[in-house]
Length: 240
Length: 398
Image (cartoon, rainbow over all chains, first blue to last red; front, side, top):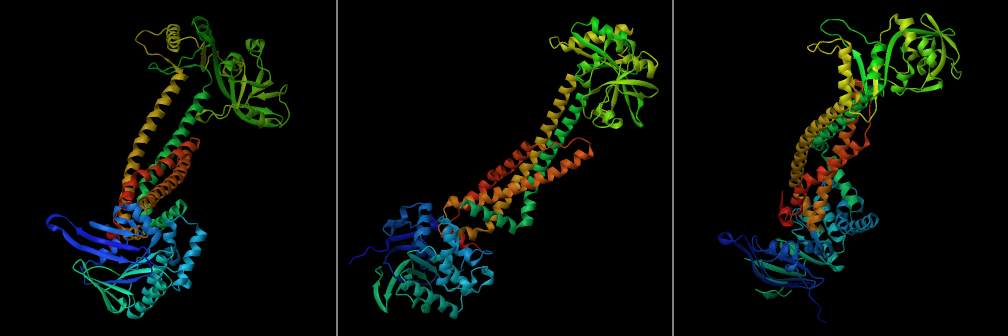
């Protein structure tokens, strides 16, 4: 059964600056990701993994190439259209948690629903359900400053989940956590992936990447290798 | 969405309460100044108009003044008759003379003023008899001991609910018959109470209280069809001639034109209002720039928050609305505080300079709407800047 890929990148390049100061961060990425995948994107600093993540998250557009998300050519969309795409189909988890300060866990989780124009009662119910998924219902009325790093990251994951997105994008989700909390977060991401959500994660830790089904390794603005279950699937191209 | 945006804005303002207050100070002061000046201005206008109306409904009021010669030469009834008969357009000219006296009735006494007037005076000043009847010709010509009471005097010495008409009371050294009561006229200018008076025929007061045939002043009413300045000129010419003034000598009397006083008052009030408007505009402009400044600071401080909002799918206009709402809420609250302050200041100031407190809802509403409008004008640029941030850069912002 051939299914349409969730994400398709063809010949993606990204150049920052122009003229002599121009820097080509991505030099032609081809990558296909199906629904239900758990992909870890790895690579040294400056290899282009964050830039790729930004494009995958519809936060940025490629300089050249085609990026299809759910069959839609994202590089043709304007700012607000990409915002709507993020609002409906994408959930973000950042290294720095990025919760709103002096705002309770529950309100943080409700935030994406606010922009969907959902009613207060529905927002509350959905946010509590998402907090339940990450096991933080008892902490719902706490502000981020009253939560540990691991708890804050779980709130951030709940916020990403609350809209029931197709894809969860996690940029170094364990970067600010100790190893024990990191394992908790990775277990949580794996569980969510098993429940059906596609997870794309940037990390530079092999241990964290081992939770993913597929590892995409970047080097010098190109996909270097794609590994699945210890086997190298492709080299210098992108079929995941 | 708008409801939660407003809630969010209010919460943000509360978080930085001191900063919010300092920021809106310009608007608070501007609005308070406008509200106070307009309210007190209304009070002053009302007070002066009250004084003017206490001058009566006549067109001119004529009274003698002291000149270099050092004496006051009062007018008499012959002057008044001459004015009425010789100047075309004059319908009524009527004199007034007043004296203080104590009224006694049935064991009660009351210090008041006796106004010597004829019916023509009452008519010229639109003073109506509420109960009983005005003077008759016989009473006026003979100077009979009859009187009309002001309501204050009636309240002071007559039992409530009983009619004083027909009663015989004592006024100073004479006895007089009450023939009527004057309608309530209210507080006049210079603190004089128009209702605290007893009216008797002119001749009676001249003869029994003054012992001469002079007048304190007289009023002139003319037909609306005539040119006021022409009548005033004829009036002055006639009186100068009668008083045998040489060309070089100044008038030893004054003619007040109530219409002119009204006009002058209007012009003064207009000038005052314009001045207040200028001061308030400057204050509000400075206040508005303060708002813009603090909103720009706020946008910078909350860059990361904006990044988060954009990343989770907020549209540019939603971010703009959020900051615009905050600016408008800030300004509107400033406006409310300013109105409150202005209200208090108006009451205090009105009491201080002894003018009535005249609440004007229109200026309060205009001030509030204007203050909120300032939020839109000066909040738009910072809000737009917030909405145009790049989500990636904003998220990286420390």
